[in-house]
Image (tube, rainbow, N blue to C red; front, side, top):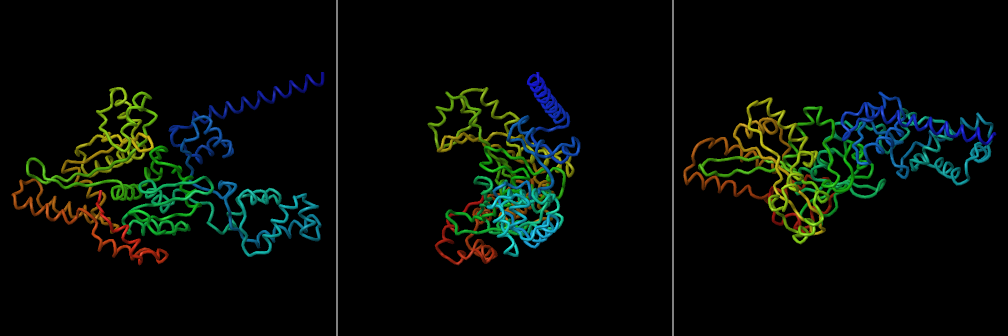
Length: 490
């Protein structure tokens, strides 16, 4: 009979736990408006549930790739294997307090006999006491807090952690701006906790901006000698993990399809910074003479996305025969496949968000501007057999181009080559606006723009000197030669 009661009790507890889980699921579904980007802190306040339970439930419900956003990043959210630098004086203080409380005469007696802490862990604590600051794993620091009944928050309030000031505001403007640069021209690679962010660009001025942002966040960077025709800035693991926490997942962006930082959609200054820098890093401009012999300035934005999973097997087998080449979407054998590729939900998230954001801001300047469509411009088959679609939209009308320049470039210049080039293009465009060009004028314009077709070596050499002194290779002709090879602007 006792056994029967015990099994009934177990069944009751199982049902109770199951019911509570179902209620949690229902509450999450009811409060989540956009499953693709969930604000964890808002959900935490509404439901009053622990963060760990919320994160696990959200991942089960919406999948592990769901963007879970929150405004603060705490030290205890760091991976267990990551390292913290802590103030050892605080550890000494807590151990002395506990010795007095439990009547222990020595640290060893306290840790191993009174508190029953394992010899190996007690040895770690002993070692911490020998230094002014101690390097400890996050999991070990959590266990220390548990043993000594210390709240995690106390370490943040008293600034016991020295490697970075926690909690970190994930909506801090420097972080949001760095997110933009890594989204555009960077990457996050490696396995957590050993991840690293890398920024790659030919323009030394852009690296100067990225380095300033990393330093403002308390991060570290390296500028290794270039292996290709570009400069690389390597960013430390903790800063990379902070970017991941802010919503920028590791791995290839064409596959992870990351969104914009949520603060960009709410803050006009950050939105303008993002769009300005995204044009420099991902956009392009073209000054051409059209069939009416008039100048036409085109402004375009584009991003790519992996669409391998949208291609049926039989079509895929044919496409991989074109490894290393690009094709037009119309060359695909089925209208159904083309429809899938050009569908709104297939467009890269960041490009779609930028498009809506830019249009709304341009309409504030001119409500009647011509609205371009986002189109799939080409499909690329990589040598590894991945199928990637490139999407873009182009402003061609005079009203749209003028509004674009007024919005993002009339009063903001970061000193990059691409900004100088656009400024010259816009100057010529306004000078000859809406009138037919003579043969002589056409030739003069072509001659001027020919000088702006590539970044001149003297300009790169001048700007590269502004990089931090850590980049010792800037005086090495061999490394400089790699960057100074044929340089063409987008």
